[in-house]
Amino acid sequence: MTGIQYDERHNVLLCWLESEGHADLPLPAYHSALAAGMDVAAAVVEPVVMAPGEISLLPTGFAVSLAPGYELQVRPRSGLAIKHGITVVNSPGTIDADYRGEIKIGLINLGHEPFTIRRGDRIAQLVLAPVCRATIIAVDGLDETSRQDGGFGHTGV
Image (cartoon, rainbow, N blue to C red):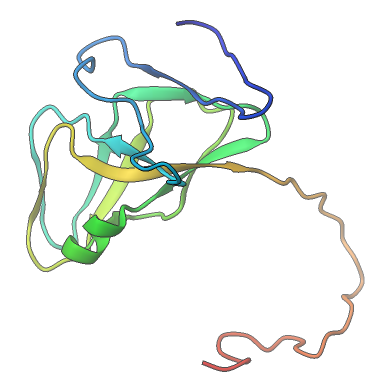
């Protein structure tokens, strides 16, 4: 399949596998009827053992083409995070609509045990989201609120 095709109702995300060595891997997929995120698999050639505290940048074997005005957010899989301490290091990661390279997932092992990632393991999820762009202007002051500059627990714990 070539070219970019968008469905106006769903802003279809077009994925394609890299040209060599990844035909055995699934494309990102929703694993339940109402899932917000698509699970994405690791395209590692050999198992990757992540020591506690280690960061690994893992290939996925595919690239994407997104409709203008959308991004893909890279988020942790809750089971990996809760059970093993494996999470996306820059969560949420952002894949911009104009990026065309292979998607790679940065994971960190926050657990206390080494963790092994094998080819085809589901390592993260991707959420398609609309993007709002701001117009930035300089001003002399901001409007007043009851909160003002109170932050970091100012409204209670």
